[in-house]
Amino acid sequence: MVICASLEDCEKKADATEIHRKKITLLTFGITEYGKDVPVQNLLPVYLKRVKSTILEANGETGYKGDVILKVTHKPEYKQSQLHKAEEDIQFIDTNQSFLSKENYSELLKLKTLLGQSR
Image 1 (cartoon, rainbow, N blue to C red):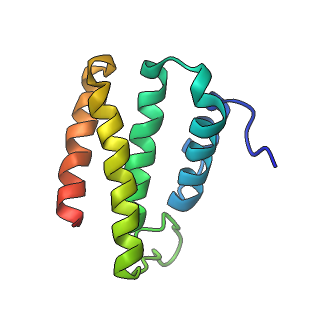
Image 2: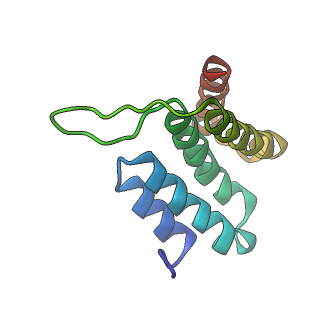
């Protein structure tokens, strides 16, 4: 099933939801399906968004909002596997750091700090 029509479409749909797991699914689909035809500098912001949602989700943030903010506790193995995925994405971004804008570089530094605090 095609959940979005292009990398930009996947990114827009991910931006439109607050739910981290849904963001991760949309961004991953976009990267996997459409990323190979996109210049690296256009992929990096998508990776940054996926890293952020992956770390937040691993830390129990769901993104669900309402009368009660839903937070969950994951099994340690799940949390570690999610943090490992975030770490892999950060390594990819680091490898292509020369393509980052100042804002995206600043976001990368924040995400590295968040990842370190999440371990």
